[in-house]
View 1 (cartoon, helix red, strand yellow):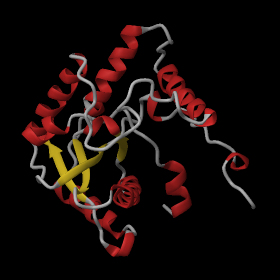
View 2 (cartoon, rainbow, N blue to C red):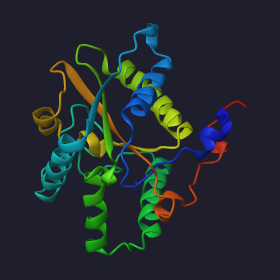
View 3 (tube, helix red, strand yellow):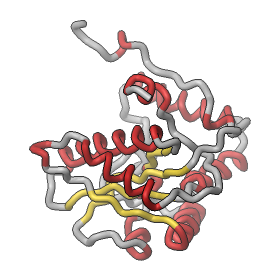
Length: 227
């Protein structure tokens, strides 16, 4: 698989097979992604692996916090931390976000007024779509957040592409780090770590339509200048 093919085929996977990821393969993917560039070669990313019983505990607790209406309390600000998330956004970005939501839910046959269907989807999301592995990607609290998060993004994309090359799928999830205090209570999260993002990882279910819908991308005229 060449780079262009990998970029085209990487996508968010929301239904995984009930199949464990071999330990050596998981380690290979995590380590290979560390070839990512970083500011001054600082390599600020740190990875916490959740699987097995620990992941099941976190899955249940994460879902219950959502059902109890507990607001997201992520270590770092993200698009879900405050109320109506798109209210202050540029119009074109708000539209893309809303269109994506309609596309995902529509693929599942969930209409706008279907509160039961929507809650079922969000419950699945807070359970990390039943992925056999959840990776928490973080960085030391003493680092400047802007540059560290930029580097975490580079690492995360490399990890997703490496996973794809090995036949696995990923879903980068803000919901993976909504409740960091709960995660710290059940996983070996170093005390100095800001949790930036979660990545669900496993073998994709090829029969699930949600893993195959046609994605929409903005034309370059909307975001490239001077070319």
